[in-house]
Structures are given as C-alpha cells and as structure tokens.
Image (cartoon, rainbow, N blue to C red):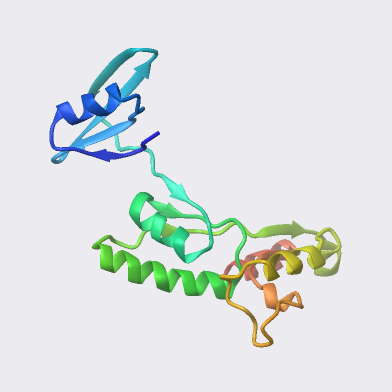
Length: 171
C-alpha cells in the first residue's frame, strides 16, 4: 500500500487505483486529495485536514534514510544514547541533502520504576540487553569494542525511582 503519492494529474491517481494500489493520500500541486476505498467503489475528495503523520522506526543508517524519504518523525524503540546521538547527526546531514527540515525524533527506552535503582534493575534482564546490543553491527560500540556493562548500553534502559527516570531522560 502506498501511503503518500505525488502526481501531476488526477488521472495518475485513477491509474494507481485501477492497478490495485490502495492510495490513502494524493498530492497535486499544493492540494491534498484523500481517497477512500470500499471494495470496488472509489471515492476521493479534497482533504480538509492535515494528513496523519507517519513515524518510522529503526536504528540503522538505512532506517534514517527511509525516515527522511517517507516519514514525518523518527522513533527508534531501543537504542543506546551514543548511537542515537550519531544517528541524529546523520539525520541532520541526510535531511539537509534532501532539502527537508529535520523532523521530530523520540526514543522508547525500556523503563523500570521502583523504590530504588537496584530494585528497578532487578526487573530487567540486563545480560540479555547487553547480548542484544552486541548483535547490532551498526550501533556505536564502547571504547572496548564490545558491550559488557550497563553503562555501555546507556540510554537503552531507564531504571530507578521516578526522579531517576526524569534525570535519565534529560541526559
């Protein structure tokens, strides 16, 4: 399914639809058109509201290029802070080359809240996360070249009291 298409005429939209493609939004010049597909019935009209933003995930350089090409935002699920920092610099570079503004970005670290950091970390399989991190060939490696400590995967996990979590998000 194509999420967003650019065409020069409504006949392009019709051709896409007739080929079996399900088009949700079509742009002609500065006008957005929305298409609703119900079985074999086609209905399109000028959009009155902004389109739903498309956020892309992934933590590789290729994912960053896809975000710039197709997305409105970037939301990698788990990523180390060092890798996130490097990817943001890459996103700036790729966005500039494409003539696009830098989009909004966020992260979704694994979060464990408890009375203290030790208790919170007791609910997290840190060894498994370190092992998973070592399988990511495109992540920024620590100085030793291999992830082996909780500090090496900083940003991947937020654990502790609510205050610890807040501090961690401001790192």
